[in-house]
Image 1: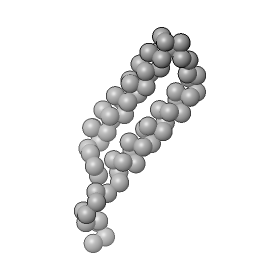
Image 2: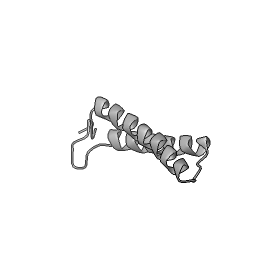
Image 3: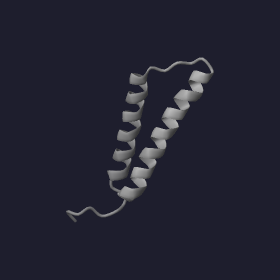
Image 4: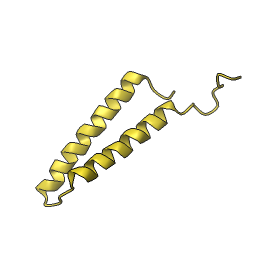
Length: 65
C-alpha cells in the first residue's frame, strides 16, 4: 500500500474540496460545469486515488512469496 488509510481519506476530502471550489471559480469567470460532470470527475479522481493507494509497491515482496 502506498499510503495509510487516514492519508487516503485526507487526499480524497482535499480533492473534493478543490473540485467544488474549482467549479465555483470557473462559474465566476462564466464557465459553467454541470453538477453531473463535476460528480463524474470526482468519481474518477477518487477511483484513481484508491487504485494508486492499494496497488503494491514496485519491488516489494507480495504476500504469496
